[in-house]
Image 1 (spheres, rainbow, N blue to C red):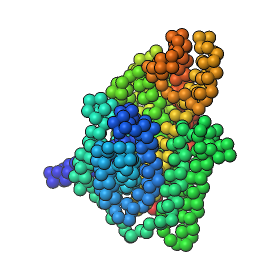
Image 2 (tube, rainbow, N blue to C red; image 1 turned 90 degrees about the horizontal axis):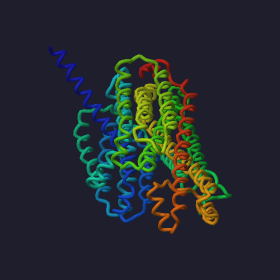
Image 3 (cartoon, rainbow, N blue to C red; image 1 turned 90 degrees about the vertical axis):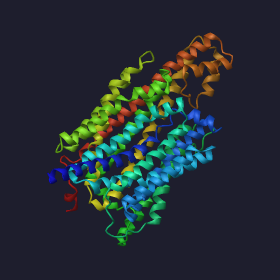
Image 4 (cartoon, helix red, strand yellow; image 1 turned 180 degrees about the horizontal axis):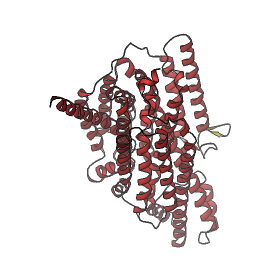
Length: 540
């Protein structure tokens, strides 16, 4: 009886721990998508521009990418649980500041800086705390639930943001985050810490180089829509006739190269590096990191394209758009939970390959189904497939990366892992947006030039003005703009038809790019192990 009671208490404790860590992951991911449907409302409320609010959203990603590796090292220095709780306090302070923000400056301080720093402490600590609280055989299930919580947050973000903005205020989203953090801190007392065996040192030079390199690279990627990837858009920053995006990415890569050269120098001097360069020679670790990169590239690209299609092309409300995305969460959670539980000894390589193929199939089905006259329900089956793929990957990748190294390096790996996922997410969103706008612009201009209903002088003016990119406009927005310009009914209808076709062309091109990325990912699946790794084995 006592043994049964003890086992029951142990199971309940494990559930409480995973609930705490999954809630933390959910909260970190929520900010990446929750305000995407409310940008115009927030801009109006703060008396600023849509560009300013979009800048705040991207700055949050930028700050996380810059400080994630350092956050993992800080966790090793002060303890993973302490880093997690301090990060929660910083994050809650940022959420409260954002909820009360009277202007864009305060919003940037709260949302981008404080929440970004908090996330950089929390996310690597979550990876390490899972490793410290669960034995190797239970880690795939635990990591699967944590990763699923993050992906579900991204899927639910538009729905939560839409409900809050429609019926209450966008500020209540951030006020609610403060309440959730208080609950997480109360539950975190039951989470076991793994105190560091020795007191590591912080490599300040390496920290500066990594932050500067990653920050510069990610900033370049995030500005690609505004400045152009290679050829600069009109009035965009450029040097030697090439977009500043290229130079920023090259500069960031050079700084990251310097960072690894510095880390290798420290190892040769028998000093402690910020990141052990030897980790990158670990085949299974780099395989897991590569899959994380491609997963988030495709995942965030899909989360960029699908809401645009539903809300702008089909004209659904923010609330209806969020509801249509929900099916993805069903298969995602089911796969993330069921696979480790029902198939504990399955080949990680097989599950990862099936996950990539499922994401590829969902993307292709969605690409084929896109139609301006379709009902929003056509995204259901593709999203079920994509959700299944994400769930299959989530059930394996976290355990693959952490089990590839000794437990004492789990926080370090957590920082690298979350940096890679941020890079994948940033590049996926930027690539999808860039190819969408490029193809849509080309298609729109071609359609206008071929339309007999549009006067030649209008065609000439449109071709010149739209070379920098066509905005992704709904029919209502375009119709209002044409009415203000005094366009005739024939010209207006021709422009609306051209815009309709161009939108679908752009969306299909973006999805084709994501499908291509999924195919490329298949070439790297061989680096995933065929058997479940155990952390003990990695020490030998």
